[in-house]
Length: 283
Image 1 (cartoon, rainbow, N blue to C red):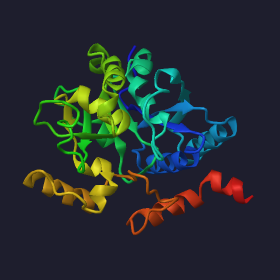
Image 2 (spheres, rainbow, N blue to C red):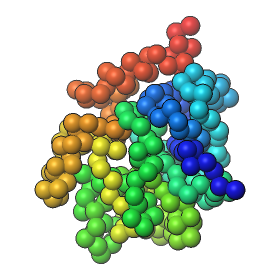
Image 3 (spheres, rainbow, N blue to C red):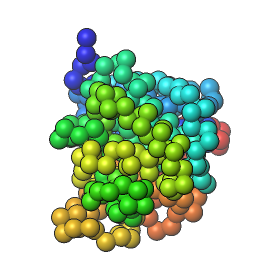
């Protein structure tokens, strides 16, 4: 028995430190979703406390009667030796395992959305994206368009950002993408700079459908830091800035720390200040 077509699975990942920021993502997600759509939200749980889980569940309940939230666990030992940084923890690698974990639910597709995002449009539109027979749909990473060469891949394809993905679960699992990605991380650690994203690109090159940039308006796109690789991309970059659907606060600078002059920072911080997490701190 397959899930109702009006049920959309959305997966994200968080540890305890990111739980307040995840609550902002969830609030903005639920605030924009169609009333006739139910969301099954799955959080890949990297030791989130019971207290924070209760707050996240309350966030979902307060913002929607059509959404559920549950937690998934990943064998973290698989990823514990891989590269991390000041803003990318081991949690980021866990998304590599999610299609295998979700196989039992018999979803055709799943949305993966990073926790450090602000959602401004209905993700049902994103879920309906045509993957053109590819394993995932994703948005180009403007600062790494030609990074496949660095990864030892001989291809003219562009490099995508893995913070927002539409994933064909069956195709991913049939093609053993999880296993291949882990193998690349183990065997080519000298080439890895951008963590799991590098490995996913090395495995999924020429097997991803390019989504409109408005669905993953990374900080570098918002600030127009990198030239578009083609005239068509130049146009879609402009369209994305005019009507962003998902604002993704990529890089070290986040709204809650050192980010400056970002046009969506105030909107984000207002949601954070209104969150259950902030209210609990100030109670």
